[in-house]
Image (cartoon, rainbow, N blue to C red; front, side):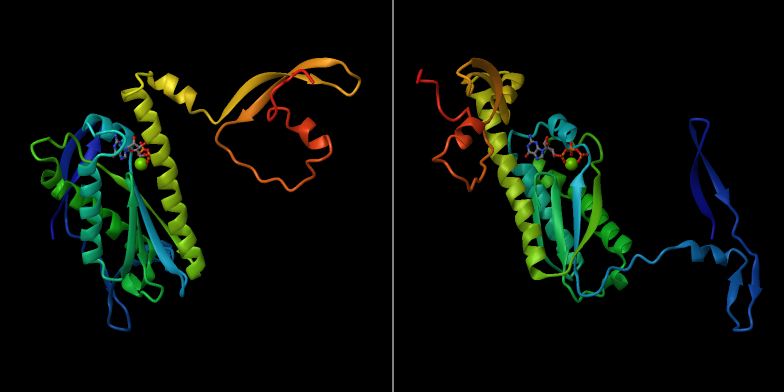
Length: 263
Ligand code: GTP
Ligand code: MG
């Protein structure tokens, strides 16, 4: 067979052809093997541990830019979400051992059943099939969701494989992704409302939503002296404490709770 291949040479792309290789030797088992056959031994075994759920998660590359250039609505673009879902549906119908898929933003997780023997559980096979089927579907169905809006360049997705040994672990994984979705959505919704309806600049909105703010508090020291100290106040973080709030120590350690009333 003649193989045509694009070779990148000194910044130019040219085409070269390779002749069929014909260096074969016969072994006693009557199998024809080339002298190059040994390179196969460099391949590593990447089959996934048995009895584990196999999760393949893909994520759009540089979708911040992709979303901007394709004018995705903020914070959520229903066309983009629909296209992601349709592409995931396509992956699931091609790879029958996937039992559930969960997606948000530019990512999707696919869970293969624990007992799956698809592609001999080889991580690279599973991951690349998921990612390539998803990517080609994303392009294939683009028009169905974006109509006349042109796809400006080919999108790409990375992929990873993670194994979860128990039902609890798998549920916690999915919960983790969904909690991430809620946190991001909450932030993005408030952020874009401040910008679009509150007329703040993106920097002002970012500042408003910062996790910590530093304020100066006047503290009375045990020797009756007063001192201004910078205090970092947590705006969004909620912390648990199990301690004595009758004695002074707690209040001295948390001077940001009570406002100064001169007492
Ligand atoms: P890498 O994944 O590291 O390559 O970077 P990324 O730019 O893809 O960022 P990341 O995967 O962390 O986040 C996805 C990004 O896609 C978001 O930050 C948004 O900018 C964009 N995005 C995803 N969905 C939407 C959407 O519905 N609307 C808009 N406007 N943007 C979206
Ligand atoms: Mg991404």
